[in-house]
Image (tube, rainbow over all chains, first blue to last red; front, side, top):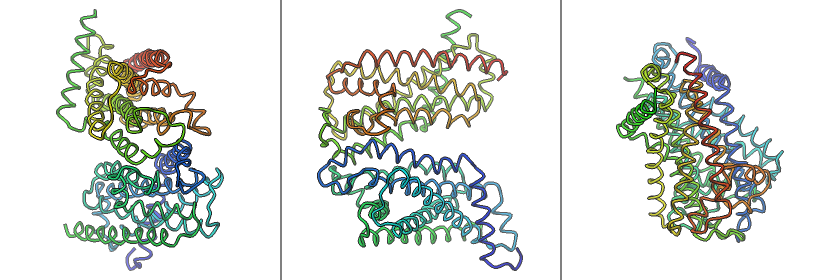
Length: 259
Length: 258
């Protein structure tokens, strides 16, 4: 790797990160199967909600389609964060520090792996969703934007996973953050539109929760078509989470390298 | 090897497990997911209670509470399975099998400890539900609800114990957790059975947990439904089947010299 550019270093670590994930069938199956299972249960379990006056979709299947995309991004982030923490625990990170390879390549490689996994998940979910009758109102261009936003959400969550890994250096600590992430998805407008949430305290939390805007951006492409406001808020939140989490992870990386 | 040995082993194992719970606040972990789900569903989905055909008198919070309570006690049973798997992995179970005068008492001991854990996590969910304004209209019928919760806890514990003693590794976790999770979710979680649609309605009708959930919701409403007897029969049958399963797994562990 001596003399190789940062791009080459990142590419080889991204390849390692992606292959490591794909070589763990349990992780891949969890990342694909669980979001789809929850989606299927929600879609049919809450179909009656479409008869609430003012509900914005005729089918709960369409309404709920954003849920597996966000949940899959979360699974990917936890997996990638745990892998990075495992590299720290196993001493790989320390050995890497002794080579000419830049430590930032490890972070960027891991994030590139998250992007690759997010892309695979987004395409698979879209294919399965359409097969089961999800009607994407924004058409094929909307599907492309849907996958793009999913990848950005995965990248943002991946940055948070990296922060946790670099801060704690513990696989267990990263994985124990899973319930917190999971709950933050449910404490958003993922199950009902915010204006139909009756409990004020829940509506306030959902309004303050950035995941609501990611969900609403993704959902708008499916149930509305092209909603500029929802998309601006969705992409805006995704970029803000990416900027903050990657900056935080970079700062933590510098601290860890200096130790 | 008489009954004295059976119960003395059971109480010794139960005492150790309960001590372990109180020495480590993580024993409340099984309550976390039911609490999260309860807050998310009861808080975010109350509008679903206005859907035509939703006729559960005590309201949507109470509707979700019953599911959260049964989930809490079932997960309490699953987590006891994780503890047993941990005991096999760290060598404690091997010493326990060598020392116990009646090994079947070990299963009863873990089950008693799981009941203590289930009771505490159930109380936690109940307190949260009452704080969020859930009405308690069941009166004496609430004992019927508690009885069903006990059966669910014991059945889940025996299932988890069987898997843990068969696999004897902490990697048994997903094998214990996933079926319990599926049984809990493939039921009328968000709306009553008559409002479910598609494949979920078909599976929910076949899922024995649906009958238990329906009866438990009836008890909370103070209007026990016609499925009370079938619900108890299913609960007792599950306990009996999983007791045999746990004893079989114990024999396998003995043969393996665990």
